[in-house]
Amino acid sequence: MGKLLTSLRWRGSGGLLGNSCYAASKGGVIAFTKSAAREGAPYGINVNAVAPALTDTDMTAGMDANQRDAILGMVPLGRAGRPEDVAKAVCFLASSESDYLTGEIMDVDGGLMMD
Picture: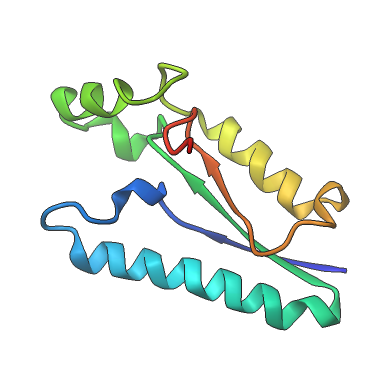
């Protein structure tokens, strides 16, 4: 059994003004993940993605406070993710605990993309 993981920013990034190229690239990652999952399944290869939303990192530390607050206002759990939240999802998807998952996009987003 093999594992292939892809990563993308939260799926809500699609459709934002001035974001078309970025959104297209992430849409491509989603399509790749799902196609590779179908192609890899007969060979015992699971392909999944992790999609974190706003996560407290050095990169987001300098983010505009108003923009950060606007995003956090949409997160049901009311906080930004932590690097260890994302790491735990990656470890799960890379482990044997996820052997029956393939083609999944795991949102690590505090409920932001909840249907």
